[in-house]
Image 1: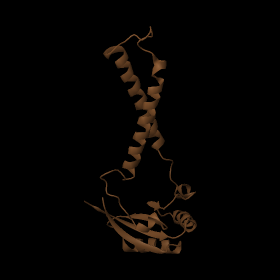
Image 2 (image 1 turned 45 degrees about the vertical axis):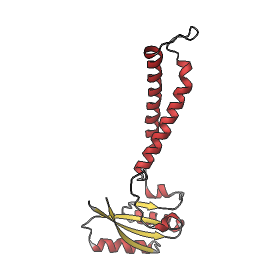
Image 3 (image 1 turned 30 degrees about the vertical axis):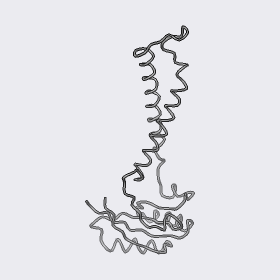
Image 4 (image 1 turned 90 degrees about the horizontal axis):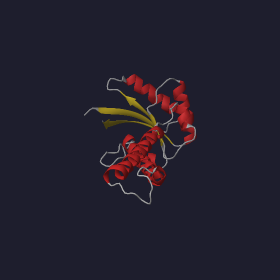
Length: 177
């Protein structure tokens, strides 16, 4: 297993962090991630992040639920167990709308939840990678991924830049991939 080195700076205020993110990006340094204990308004724009594609996954899961419901009900009503209920046709789409809607919502909700858990490494059996325990209560972190061959001058440059931007602590940590 290869190890990934992370250099991170800890901040104690979200305003300072937001200014630091803008300052670091203005200097042309690529930020790997920013960790906060609560949502910080404007951080996505400051980091230059694109919109999430989770809603696209939700649409795909929902469409799968709709198709599953319609296919299964059609098969039951016309092939497997056709029963004539009061002269209604075997293929009665209006009667199937409630169950189709319910399966659409069910597939979409469960699918998006599982996708979210997997992408954020929160699924059962996945080891969480905790950068610093204080990030869950009151500290903020800006992280930078380092390659094995990153020169020490570059590391020192990032350290000094973080301290100049208001970081109260700067650390380096190894993560197994």
